[in-house]
Length: 118
Picture 1 (cartoon, helix red, strand yellow):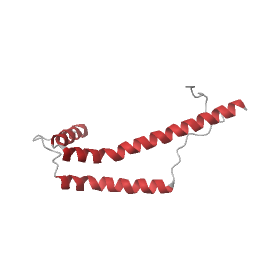
Picture 2: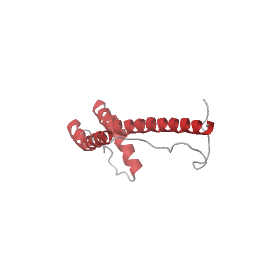
Picture 3: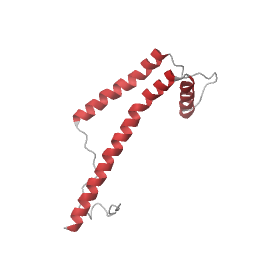
């Protein structure tokens, strides 16, 4: 696979690296994010999953996250469902942005190759 040219942006005629997001896609994402965010607490109540099952308090964000994951996994399928709900939006957002960035890099590479050859 050929490598992209590494030239300063001012010297090359490559298109700037941009990600295009339509207003409709942004509105759909904002709606899904609100449903996801407010659905976490509601789903936790419906499933009756205890995410703080340890007796000692955990200090720090990483320790609270580890406790939440371990307690949810200990709950069985209800806890797995809760963890899946909490993970789906960040995971799909990362995949979507990675694909968009990959397309932007390819467009920039094509633009750079076309401007260098002319």
